Length: 247
Length: 247
DNA sequence: CGTAGTATTGAAACGGATCAATATCTGTGG
DNA sequence: CCACAGATATTGATCCGTTTCAATACTACG
Image (cartoon, rainbow over all chains, first blue to last red):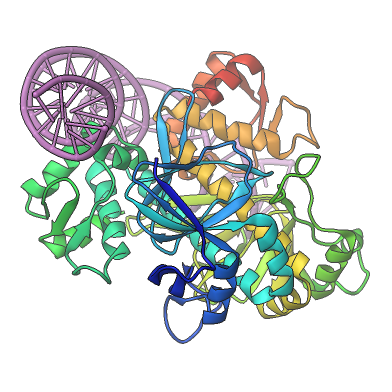
């Protein structure tokens, strides 16, 4: 398990220059849409207190039940946040991407296990230090509050996905999510799929076979084209959107 | 639609003496378990800025998409937070009870519609005033942050419920939720069910018929006894817990 | 280059959705 | 206080999609 940990103060890489950032929709309405919530000043303030961690793929960041002393901000890469149920089943609660926040605790313990999917760069923040920071900087605290709302909305969206009764519809909604995820980097039709089909099954609340069959159906009907295991391309956007919206 | 609104400053009722309170599990570990998070001082501070609203059953507090200018704290009663989907289906995201927080917005708009189930007393707080309050009182803001975590965890728990493939298991988990809800007021075995079976179906992601059959099965097997439509009693606690835990 | 995790495909069984018909409750106005 | 209407609940029969089981293929990584 590779885990390169260093203090982010030592101006080592380009990463450090930029520092942590969050993504969320503001609490109240402002002219534009979703924005960079952290000001440059806040970013630097966080960077001073953060530890940069570089993690290999499939590394467990922390396990459910472990003492929660840090929160994390994803710099780059993809992770999954999950719980293993008594039956041996696994439920993935959330996929995490750049600028996402994780490490939310209950009574000082992490509730989910978090594991990297791809190689990841993350910023680790000490909880104690952070709450002290909040006392001095109310605006920064408000950003975290907003971000937590954002995560909450994602959880509710996940509820709606899992509530659907058709496997193809659920898969389409996940692909939509992934497509929006890196709409900036890639084209509107290209979808990068970092996780395995098992992960997808665990996220959608389906069996692996159901996910495979749903994928096959999407490609057979000419709606989505799969290129290898970790790449897809939306061919018929119209029918794709119809599937997604057909709640 | 009865909607008695009054400024909570005018020391009218016993309600005002106590004022709003929140329920959540602390961010970090403290000796005991879930606690009253708001100090007496905080409660009074919120009460000064809050409007008390008394709402009849089945009143819509706000609709999805409406401009979000207030957040609310439930004083007493039960509510549902839901979204109507394009298909006409309805997904209930959350049931709300005493000391719960609602009115979380995205980009200045409410995302869900909130409607009372029973008569409700709620405290309404202006968002602008609240954010200003946060600037002066960082600790109060932290309470709201913790409470939002609490709601997030409930959403994730909901995900786990809906992820189950058996109807009886899902129903059992909801009954468990309701039972814990008023474990203080009522006995360990008694469960008050304020909502209708349709509401339950919309929450569990099942058809109404499936909920009815699951109820029937629980009572036929002597696990839960239903007294009228809004009351249940857990007869065989052991098998009940087995059902709930059988994830 | 082998091995363990990952994916694919088929056949069978189960469970919930849906449709339909009827029953019961709740609140309202006469 | 009762009758009525609309919402809520119950029960049965059928259909459909997903789960499960099983057997085989792939592929990434050490």
